[in-house]
Image 1 (cartoon, rainbow, N blue to C red):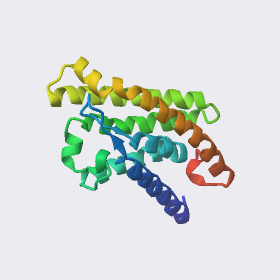
Image 2: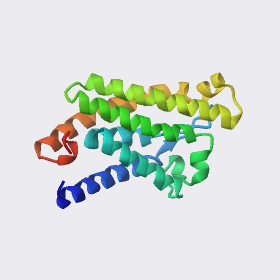
Image 3: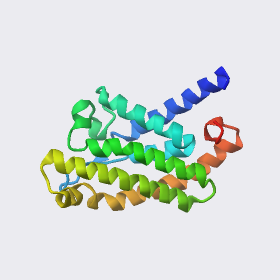
Length: 188
């Protein structure tokens, strides 16, 4: 890979990370849960569309690291180690699975948006599982109570995020490929 291509790739990753950082703090607290509804996953889906599995996952990890050092890019404009190691930390770590599986299915099934949804569902299922176990342990809840507080209220909004991501991501990916943006090419 030539230097110019490497610089371009870093720029794409940086821009995707920035999109996640902008969407991540936008959240809604719901009264029945210590877990806020965040738009971070929407940003992660979009990063997967633009960058694919490998580089979309890198953008997601960078987002988590930026939040870990204290930049307020997490839900409700928070950040720092307490966010990652607190009750919602399992969901945040689960974002990595969301990025990877979404990107993997987008890369493997380029022209099949229903398969993109399958990748998103698998990624979110892993995220929900990690987050629910983490929430149960850290908050001293039963698994069922953590599931009721950290997953059930979020399913409808997560479906909406998936639909929006597919509606936006598919045409954006096609447009970027048309203009020759290397970040969306499988060989990139």
